[in-house]
Image (tube, one colour):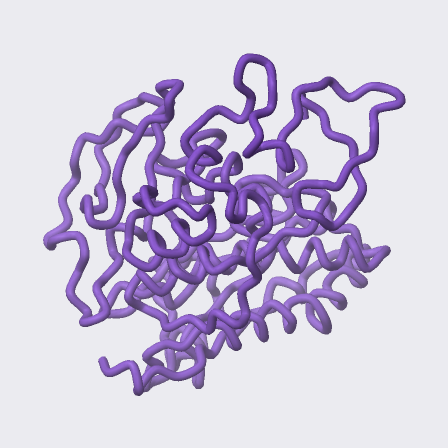
Length: 345
């Protein structure tokens, strides 16, 4: 498909499940409908272009069992390239402090996700101030990135720009050593997409090594030796990781942790989506992540504390002291707030 044929992606949120909510969630659902989700939709529609679907998108209920609209199953959803069903307060998902989660459930003939599900845990929503509302929006932008294809489960389906699969077909199950050391029989993305590595402490990780991702990461850290973007190797429920490694990308919106300081949807996430072969990204929508920006190869390759001390390249990002009363205030790693650093947390 010629790049000139790509157009702004059209996203449809399905609010059907909102209609059956208890009255106590009236304000939550109203805010999501009127403000938060329109902002999320607008962000991604302004950010990605796609080869548009020429016909109404029919939902396959076998693949997407939460979707129950007979009209959309039989006749399809018109004028859209991605449908996201909103499922609220799932007992399986909404445990602990989880605010949201997401997954795709249907693809087109080029393996691009076309239908997804976002789970929203309304009891964890802070709707009483702008900071809480913005946090919800950033989390949902993060979750839509997973639906769009930034998931370990989708990486074997990535394609070159000409439409050819990056991982040869047919896809086969292979025994793989996961980041936690366990073995799994799964579809492994080809080495041109995903590679395994080890930290200098011997911890296993996987990294996305597609061309645009490699360029963006090298520019981010000012280090031409980096092969790709490391994926999170802790607290992941999959073999490879579906988030950016927090040690390197803690201020990125699609990192595995939520921080009280601002997070940035950086060129890295857009590069990964573009390297999937399904999208063309508008990089003016991205923000440079300040964490580790220009810090050099040691920031990536070496420990953040060496012989009990923070090395020169890490002094703006790490600390070696336990937070105590009277600890000095310093600039936070994102250069936005005064803060105190804690070695433990």
